[in-house]
Image 1 (cartoon, helix red, strand yellow):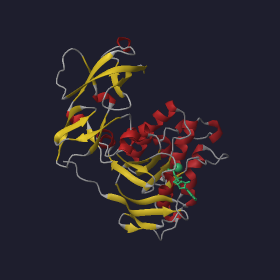
Image 2 (image 1 turned 45 degrees about the horizontal axis):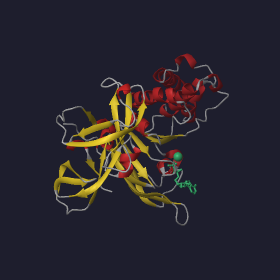
Image 3 (image 1 turned 180 degrees about the horizontal axis):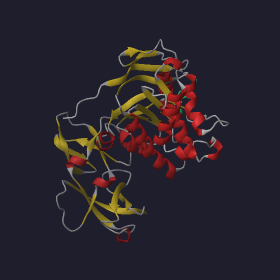
Image 4 (image 1 turned 90 degrees about the vertical axis):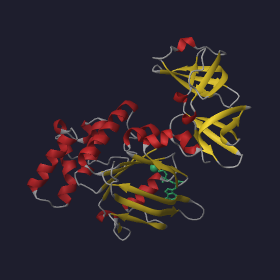
Amino acid sequence: MKTEKKAVLVLDKISKSYGEGLVAVNQVSLSIRENEFFALLGPSGCGKSTLLRMLAGFETPTSGQIYLDGRDISPIPANKRPLNLMFQSYALFPNMTVAGNIAYGLEMERLPKDEIAQRVDAMLETAQLGDFAKRRPDQLSGGQRQRVALARALIKRPRVLLLDEPLGALDKKLREKMQLELKRLQHESGITFIVVTHDQEEALVMADRMAVLKDGQVSQCGSPNDLYERPDNRFVADFIGVSNLIEGRRVGGNQIEAGGQRLSIDSVLDAPPGDIALTLRPERLKVLGGEIGHCDNVVEGLVVEVAYHGLDTNLHVRTALSAKPLIVRVPSSEREFTTFTNGMPIRLGWNAQHARVLSC
Ligand code: ADP
Ligand code: MG
């Protein structure tokens, strides 16, 4: 059994209002664990940066408490907190070398020269910057500059490193590479990372756990797999990955009715009949041949769009179950996209356990 790691940072009902009516962060409670890579995910304007700035001490919460290792940190000014915030713009010193930039924080602490040299060397190696130690920031690529900024933050060994959209300035290919790099650096340094991103894929790849924010509130918190496979509500189901929404009525037990059809779900509902919403991931829908196989639920439909993505094909299939066509993901290794055409009748199936009942 995995033992629960101890909490490093506890946010207790943190709120931040900017004047009348604008609540940027609304009663956020989170517990972030030792050595964890934690992502704060949400659309632009949902309060991610405000939350991070409160942790760093650049904003004061309107209400609520923040505890670091069990101590309320509200009286501690930003520059004394063992939490280091890495800004979106890396703000490297342009006239200093890479090694100089990395050493700067330790020099400010007036550490002995040999200790600084030793730690800078080790950090240059960890961040794979050894060959660039003597270069200036303008002689580096975007990814290398990013690594220097990270090295500069990590060398101070903060208890928690806060990163606000750290990969925002990089192009897609480099971002994907740096996501793995960030994860490696977090793992090797053993420092707790809290990373803000609006990119759900990035959060899924990097995070041990993540919180999805909406309008300043935590919509759901859990592991990437929890949130992807078991979204609690429509917002999370829609924000993370692609999902199909089916709205219907409970008819008791594990049966619901949608589009004039009975569907089975995995959980037995003891609530009285009423409206219900289900979500179903595109890869859980199977295109059925002549035989129905082992699917609990089967629906007839018409292909209205075939979108080829190389690795797979997304079929948009109109059925009686929802106003929007259902999206079905067919791996190219299973069936070539050329076997599908618009207007083609098709039969889809899925197992009850793969449809998730949403709370709201
Ligand atoms: P995110 O980082 O998720 O995009 P922010 O935390 O930057 O969101 O902003 C959350 C909300 O708070 C937004 O509506 C934003 O306009 C508002 N906001 C942020 N900072 C300030 C400020 N200093 N004064 C007034 N409103 C602010
Ligand atoms: Mg922001």
